[in-house]
Length: 452
Ligand SMILES: [Mn+2]
Image 1 (cartoon, rainbow, N blue to C red):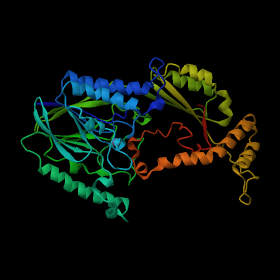
Image 2 (image 1 turned 90 degrees about the vertical axis):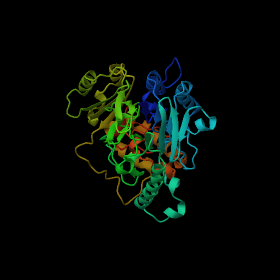
Image 3 (image 1 turned 120 degrees about the horizontal axis):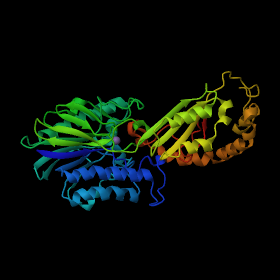
Image 4 (image 1 turned 135 degrees about the vertical axis):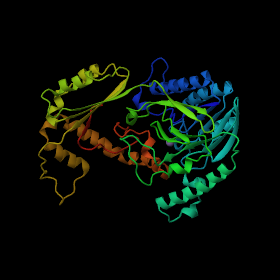
C-alpha cells in the first residue's frame, strides 16, 4: 500500500495584518506561524515516511512573493527533496501571473531541476517512481480562459457562455488524459478547482460568474483511486467513490476561517480500498468578540465582561462593539488595551448606531452644490457633540482631498481584469479589517468609527 500526504492552500505570506513583528527575528509572527505549521506538516511526511507529497496549490498570496517568503517555502520543500520523497506542486489561482502567460511562482523548482519536484502548471499525467512502485498523477491546475480558449473564440460571449465552452474543452482534454492512463497502476487526480458541491463557510457566498466551477461528476471518475483537491479553505470530503477531499488551508488566513479545523490528509492508496485520515494541525486561534452596547447602562463594563469571558491568550482577537454616539466617551481605550494584553494581536472596531431621528440639514439642499469640505463643515456645525473633533476632521479631510488624485492613480493598476475575476472565496482580504489608505481609498460608511 502506498502512503501519500496531501496538503493545500499554504498561502505563505498572507494574513500578516494579524501578526506583529517578532523583536528577536525581525519577522512578522504570522509568517513564522505559517512556516512552523508547514514544517510540522512535512515533519509527518518525513516521519512516516510517505511515498509522495501532493500539494493542491496556492503556495503564496500571489505569483511574485518576496524573496524571504519564497525562500521560507523552498527551505521546507527541500527537506522532502533531501530525504528522497517525491512531490507534486500544483499551481493555484494565487500562484499564476495575472496575465495568464504561464510562469507561476512555483515554476522556479522545475527551472532549477530540484530533484523529486514536479510542478503541475498544465493538464498532464506524470508517472512517478516511489518506494512502493509507480503511481500516475494527473495534474489539473487552476484554469483561466486563456489556458484553453483564444481571444477570438470568446469574443462577444457572456461569462456563462465562456464557462460552458471552457468546460467542454476541459471534458475533452481530461478524457484524453484518462484514456492514456495505465489501468494496472494506481492513479490520482490532483486539481485546484472550485467543485460545485463544495460547502463554503457561511461568511463567504458564491457569486455567479466569478471563476470557473467544475461539476463534481467531471472529476469523480472511477479510474482515479484518489482525487486530491485544493482551493477551498474549509476541509471536506466531497465524494467516497472515488475518495475526493479538500484538506483545506493549513493555517487560518483570515477571520472567515475562525471556527474551521486546519490540517492535512494522510492517504493510504490502494485500488478500490483507498483510505484517508484528516490530521489536524495545532494552529493559532482566532476569536471574535461581538457586543451590542446600545442598551447597556455601563458600556465599558459590559465590554470588559465580554472580553473576560473569552479565551484570548495568544489568540488573534477582534473586538466588535456597537454603541450610541452619546456612549462613545464612556469607552476608555487604555483600559480595554490592558484587558486585551494577553491576546497575540487585537483590533477594536466600534460601530456607532445611527441616531433614532434623522433630521435633514436645511443648509444642504439639491438646489445648490457644495464642495466636500464645505459640506463637511456644514455637517459638523450641526453636531455640537463633535465640536472638539471639528478642526482635526476638517484638516484630515483637506489632506484626503489633496491626495485623492494620487490615490486614484495608485489604485488603478490593481484593478487588472484577471484580478477582478479572482474568486472571493479564498481572497486574502478580510473586509472587516481596516485597509491601509494606499491600498483602498474608499471611505468607511458614515456609521463606522474606527478606534485603531
Ligand atoms: Mn485557490
